[in-house]
Amino acid sequence: MRLLLLEDDPILGEGLRDFLAAEGHVVDWCRHLAAARAALQGEPFDAWLLDWQLPDGSGRQWLGELRRAGQQTPAMLLTARDELADRIDGLDAGADDYLVKPFAPEELAARLRGLLRRQQGGSQGLRLLHGLQVDLAGRRAWAAGAAVELTAREWAVLEALGLRAGRWVGKDALERLVLGFDGEPASSNALEVHVANLRRKLGRDSIESRRGMGYRVQLEPGHG
Amino acid sequence: MRHELSSIARRLLWVTGLGTLLIALAVTAAAVLTADGEVDELLDDGLQASAAQLSTLLQAPGAAAPPHVDAQEEARFAWAWFNAGGRLLRASPGAETLQWQPVRAGFADREHWRLYGLELGHGRGLLLVAQSRAERREVRAEIRNHALLAALALAVLGLPLLAWWSQRELRPLQRLAERLTGFDAARSDPRELAAQLGPPARAELLPVHEALRQLGDRLGARLAMEREFTAQSAHLLRTPLAGMEAQLAVAMKELPDQPRLQRVREASRRLQHLLLALLRLFRNEPEVKRAPLDARSLLAGLPLGGLLLQDGPPCALHADAELLAAALLNLVDNAQRHGATRLWLAQPDGGSLLLSDDGTGLADEERRALRSRLATGAADQGLGLRLAQLVAEAHGGGLELPDSTQGFAVLLKLGE
Image (cartoon, rainbow over all chains, first blue to last red; front, side, top):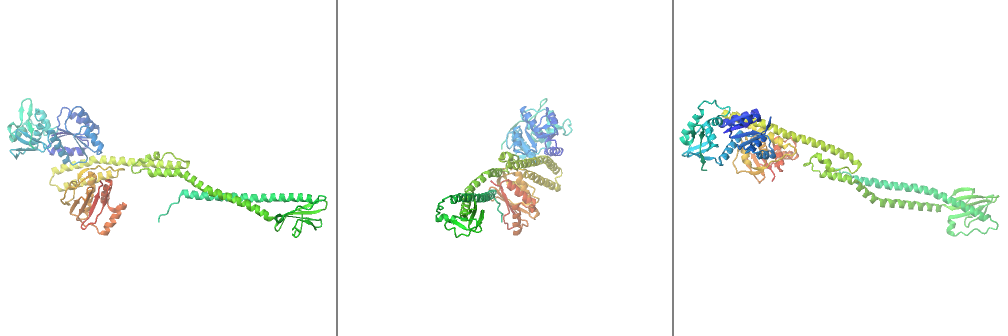
């Protein structure tokens, strides 16, 4: 997933960015609300991880504004506010989940997988991709009952397309989703290499491509 | 033996009652003394007038025999007429034998008589009239007795009235005590005390009300400050603790073969649990956030420092996960320090947990002494047990140390 992390504490922010990156996510870390607003301009994110109290504003308030503007991206509030009233307020503002600091990053990662599963429309998250069973949240895939091994980047590509299943995703957009702002230096064909590898492992027709439109996958409900 | 406090009402009644009685007696004594003097004056005036009238009668030409005095009167009144040489000329019946000498004009006292001598003009001698002192004594006694009776009646009838009045006047004090007793110090803001007490009902209570108002204001401000401080402290500490946790998680991913990192992370988690639980427990009103949980899973997820938690069924209950985790963690610390290698967790009833270990345990006497220290909240019992006790008490329960044949056992009662 491509994640927007809004956290002003340098130690926590760096730790979460690096942990989630090691989990295979692409993380864009902003330390101020202004930077996060700029990042959101036209940039696609799969989920937002927002601190409540920031030097230049409130993450909770910004989330409320985004929801009122029609933004539906899954969002999780990460905050030191542990009172029940605050949790209710945060969830009512539009957060899909609420984590009270301190938390284990492993738990954060598990909750992100939960968000992804819910976005996929099922608690188990099993989908069918061109006849193959895939669990995007759990990053597992099977072909004829045998597990298919994909790299972290390949999963990132598949996840980015899967979250937008049925829609064309432009090459530039897909690159940003998979590589982020600070990702690996974009060689001209890094993305094409990952797509080619996916086609080889999952089937040639698993990922459609069309000049000028980008890439697309079709996912069907899986069998639980 | 408790020394019983003396009662203001009883002391007031005693003092005012006794004072009233003494005043009544003093007034009576003063009245009696005054009356005695007046009685003597009056009776002397009467004696003098009698002498004057009698002298007129006796000296009148052709005076008849003096009026007959009956036997009763004779005992109280007598007269005798002496010539200029002092020889008795005439006397009232029975008075001839009385010892009148020496006779002289004016008042005198002789044995049982009060005498008055009247010089008769023209050398006609001296008329002596006498009144028995018994009569005077009788009059005085009557006055004294009536006055005393009046004083006693006043005291006897007045005392109940005094008692009632004293109680009535002490009622503002009783009301103040009732309102102070009814003030729920555990739940109410001390700054509300003055309003709850209402205005002082007596001028003497004004300084008391004012002192209580100031005390309540200072205490309320202090408690509010401490509450704010602990809340702010918890808030400020959470992000740095989360930072430590995140960095350690990344470090362990980068260096999975470094067990020391795992130990550092465990220590960091223990610090988190302890710190946050302490900050919550020492808020003015620790708020327990109950939620359904499985205590066995909670315990299994804590850094047990090598202790082995024995298998068992889930321990489902409603408790505050953060506080319970801190309590269990500190009991686990105790178990470790006392050489335990294994832990057992049981649930004797819906709201209790029994944690036992196979460590060195305590001798019966030591266990009894520890129970006593826990009951009194003594400071030397070690933070671990005290923290677990505070957590249990915050849940409305308590901590017990049941007897154990091996190791050490702690029973956490979490209410509900």
